[in-house]
Length: 272
Image: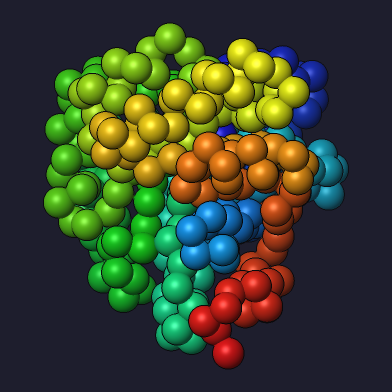
């Protein structure tokens, strides 16, 4: 999820409309989740999925997260969106678990949400209410974590990890601060930014970089996901280099929840 301050770039009329929508309950405003399956190379199936927050408005059409996320942060509505995403995502996970469909769900999180005193209690309540096993949930943070106190963030993350929920670092490599986060924040999974993936396999320098980066991350104890996989050549290269998981349009596009169930049943070898 891109958390750059793009909300101010909207024309005034559209920005005002978006601000009004953000004051409504998320479902009423037109927010929903779609889901992009993530391929597990060793099991040769889709065993993870990323929940992506979307907004569609009759007047504005489809609004990019690059526009509504910064505005939600600026207007203190990011907590409502985060709670909506967690509730919707965990309800879906509960339904999939009832049908014995194994899946780990990734949900994007703003550090501003994580920093709220009531976040931990809210997450506990959602997990209890839906009956979702915490290990089925993975929260994604982007490199915008620099906006928060790293030491305070590490403490918050450890409290959440104590519940059994894990964390991913999204867009790894998109800033110089990535390496520091590996040392001080308790991430389980590293998602390689698409900027590393797009040049593969034609760029010798990027191929060499990824070839050395993946085993280094493994040695540090991280699971590695390659983002933005858009071709068979990229997929094959990442598989040869030992990438654990892959995500991108070549493998699966984001889809609404009513399509996800059938997609997973059709592609998972252990689901009858």
